[in-house]
Image 1 (cartoon, one colour):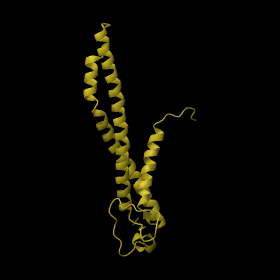
Image 2 (image 1 turned 90 degrees about the vertical axis):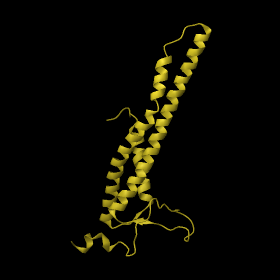
Image 3 (image 1 turned 180 degrees about the vertical axis):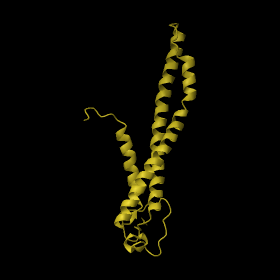
Image 4 (image 1 turned 120 degrees about the vertical axis):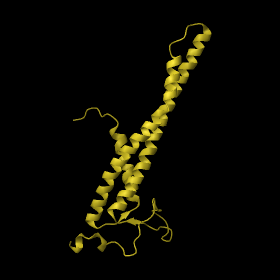
Length: 170
């Protein structure tokens, strides 16, 4: 193998992989800003995967919790309305038993969202992390520990934007 293809020629001799997350302040006095870098594809992939899992899980669990709150609030209002109709003698609507069953199963929504987020994060984080590692290693560049974090944010933003239907497409 030629020396130019060996990535160890540009990795510092005393290099150790920084611990996760190893984010540092980007601005400030030189004695406070201590940049940390990744050099190996495995490390770049690992950091990207971890950040993608954390961010995807957070976004999906927030969305799942929001869905549960909205549905629960609507069911609760219908149950209250149903109780008022009974007390006024106007006759109740058929909401009671079905709503109670649906509310009992409602807790599964965040669990399913979390599982889906985990699968999506492993796939997206692996693909993006391996591509980042390959590109940066091909160029012989060091990777700031912020790069995997930023690309994980980009991945979740792409997921959110792609969830909307766009009218008038090609």
